Image (cartoon, rainbow, N blue to C red):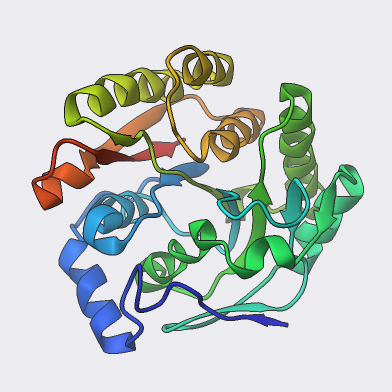
Length: 269
């Protein structure tokens, strides 16, 4: 199966040339860290493309990418994976890493094969052209769409990811990418305050504090589940620190500060 793009010409240009030109316009020469994971936003490139691109350009894009995103559609299983086929973007096709995906499913069977969850979900798709543009070589992906559940289930998914990378001996050849926007449709002042609380928890690699603050302060961070699992998995892989690469809101682009969405780019190493 080839999963074809569904937000080309909506979230980003559908033309290869225009897409490459837009991503280049966001790119800065950054020191590339040998990171274990990163967090990238997934809105239209006009709004979040600079944050996503500058984050991706701050890490070495590795041979294997485990891509975790939230479900905006509500379709499919709670934890949905694709373990075979390809994903297509205007920049070409990307293979799914069957070996990693099959082990994750075996290690935690609640992660189920489910193409319907991916068919109309944009949170993973929008990261791929940026990663393709910045990668020095082809890479494979493991796409996972995740819905809210209990912390114990997040722990099991993170352990399944760790076990798969350990079994295949590819821990050093794999980058975990969590896809998330931050606060949605609040004033600039409110969004920045709430997002600062969430970002602080992430920078401390404290998934419990992140979950606590998301609930306590009603932070509408759509991808907090992928971020929680990413923190858990990265720590199992030896993560010691996290760094904020860039934060901005849609208001910084549009000039409308009454109902903004926040975007944060963070790397974990």
